[in-house]
Image 1 (cartoon, each protein chain N blue to C red):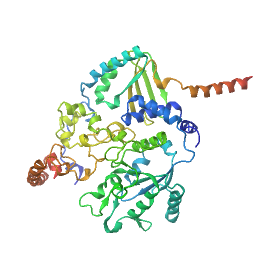
Image 2: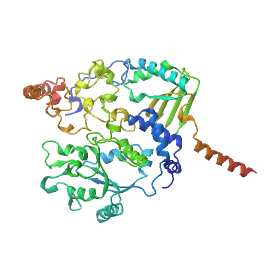
Image 3: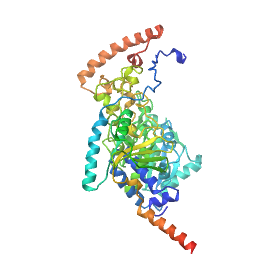
Image 4: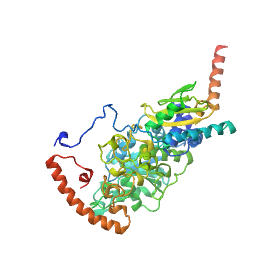
Length: 363
Length: 144
């Protein structure tokens, strides 16, 4: 791994044009102006590839492995994969061949050899209940492990909504006392890459930034890289023109839905969700939730799991959205009444085999 | 409960179209022509090329088709094969290029309108030309 990055890539059969093409697409995904793609390509091509690959330790805590699935099943083999080759992933329980004592040894060796320099990736939340007994690895609670490994890390990447904000484990009533990484670690730079799961290229983008500029990318108020979380889903949604024209789908099978109108009234959280799905898309650019006809759940935002209902329009009062408090109180009372009415209607609809409305889905 | 028990009615529009293909013009493509014209004037005036990221704009698939058809087909069509096909095609307006990058699965990865005498990606890089020259010299020395 010596000489400029472009030479490293060339040895792996990647031409300069392929690399420039990748950078143009990456810039587009990062919502940068088209000219930035060229600048990024020039900088990255010339950047000296590290003589020693930066060490990365990946700790899984209270999680479902969805984040690892997302990252490893991006679309291989790709340039993302090649950039991943530029790091040394020293500990990742799901991927590593070693197990038991050998795995622990690899972890401690990496920590010792790269003290103060390694990048720590965490996916999953940290349970604090029962002294952390809800989730243990090698006889240690996640809390102990996180504190121990974070001590020598240069920076921490909180991968996915669980590590970034507590995620599904933290959902009411939070039985394990789950918290985010930033709730535990206060003295290290933490980059939040939320999403359930996060978009693979966001991870690569952060690494690319690290390799190009040797620093961490600019973060927003919630610790997310601005390049990918700088705009809402709504800002870059291809259905946005219909919102502007006041054309909304009212149910999932009406004329508006068939014509691809805005899903706002069906509960789309796009207007308050900062993520890059609208441009990056999923499954190798195949599609994304709104394109397949379902509103955004807001999975990259804190507390999306308790935000009052996936099918409730944002304009409907719901507690976690903290609108005007008086309106919330009135809405809550009305909501309870409506919920009883809807429950009755739902069972009636079930008995009568009638079309279920959106309100029925809610309660 | 089986799938049939779920009370959802699917209506057919008779054209066998995907229900989520937004085949409606939003009106946003038409105004883009103004911006493209501005970029062309800039190119003529200063020689500087520029680009518009089509994925960054709220355009429906129908808008993109309309824009593509309206700009028309020019004389030059360039294909680049690298990790998926890229096409860099001149439109009927010389200097306005329709650039589409596909990924290795054939899906569109990014889309640009480039306003330039020649798109950046087509030009060979001096570093690569040097390597080519070394190769040529090697061929020559082998022959002599």
